[in-house]
Length: 148
Ligand code: SF4
Ligand code: SF4
Image 1 (spheres, rainbow, N blue to C red):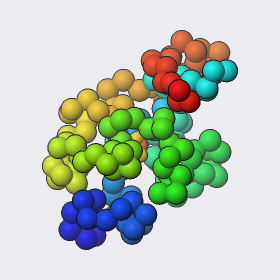
Image 2: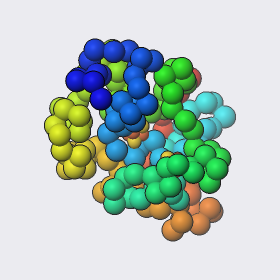
Image 3: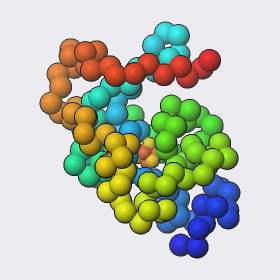
């Protein structure tokens, strides 16, 4: 990867390796979400069945789209469609002209800091496999205005 590539090149000029390295491993985009009639998004503390909550990484990243049809691929071309990403997300930060946070693994060199700082879902997420569908509504933790 090129030195401090995130400061020197636009998102669309990154290599695949650099693009993947931008993910801070918070797991927030793998929490289940529902869109309501007004376009707002309800975020649950329930993580996709494939998320390894301990590491906050996808347990089958290469096959994720085949196994989870709702899993969405983040690409530079689609970044404007991903306003539901958390404000802490590296892709969103760079797309909005902000810098990476000090706790980001590329800055700190420490992939655990995202957990210690409480940015990741490790401390509160439960797996979809443990929550019956009829109880999902009880797990809403935030409503995000998306279309406003
Ligand atoms: S929210 Fe962003 S930084 Fe966090 S896991 Fe998802 S893509 Fe990676
Ligand atoms: S399939 Fe993997 S990357 Fe996609 S939402 Fe589930 S855990 Fe996250």
